[in-house]
Amino acid sequence: MTPDTTLSTEDIELRLFLEAMYSRYHYDFREYSKASLKRRLLLACERMGFPSLSALQGQLLHDDTMLPQLLSYLTVQVSDMFRDPGYFRAIREHVIPHLKTYPSLKVWVAGCSSGEELYSLAILFREEGLEEKTMFYATDINGAALAKAEAGVYDLQRIALFTRNHRLSGGTGSLSEYYNAAYGAACFDKTLRRRTVFSDHSLASDSVFAELHLVSCRNVLIYFDRPLQDRAVGLFKDALVRNGFLGIGARESLRFNAHAKAFREFLPVERIYQKRSDL
Image (cartoon, rainbow, N blue to C red; front, side):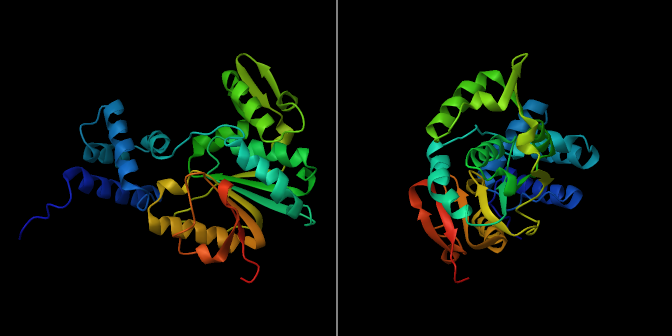
């Protein structure tokens, strides 16, 4: 039999590694972008002292403590409060007026990472008078990131950027109203998360869990292969009420997605879509 030379050894190792992770721990990265995953896992090998992905896989299968460490490499935990201020200004000025017509609201921050976007939306909704009738759902597959999100504590050096972003997003007060600073850290007001459910949820394998009015999933789809992008947007479509809103990242688009026809471009520049009312 002629060997298949179309795949490199590392590509084969990557495929086997992802299958092993799914079989052993039920974390499904098999439809994430392979180039990105391979780059991150090879970095993990280098830093942890493993000569190959196969060696790393063997350790993963026999040592449960490896999983949290590897999730920190496999999931992207990069965010800022009010990141891309124009997006939050657009929600404030154009989406909020629609949301105010509902008696109660449910908002899903999918792939919430360490919580910066969740707190951004909680502050925005408080400033717009919608906090008391809104439930937030903050989900991620990384348990360590969820714990950090629930704690709401960030390096004080980041606050200057957060403050600038908040102002540019149309913030009506001072960001300093929402946190206490001590020992080089900013601890955000616990009341900002009193209406938030933090939960493990995988866009690759889990299902819809609520009827929602706004889904914010930014800078997540770019790490998925096309079939997984289709699956994730399908979840959002099924979860959203008619005329509900979906916000995605500045470098993302629904243009070629299998569920694109279920949405109309509400604010194309800010990547905010609205679910069609006839579906």
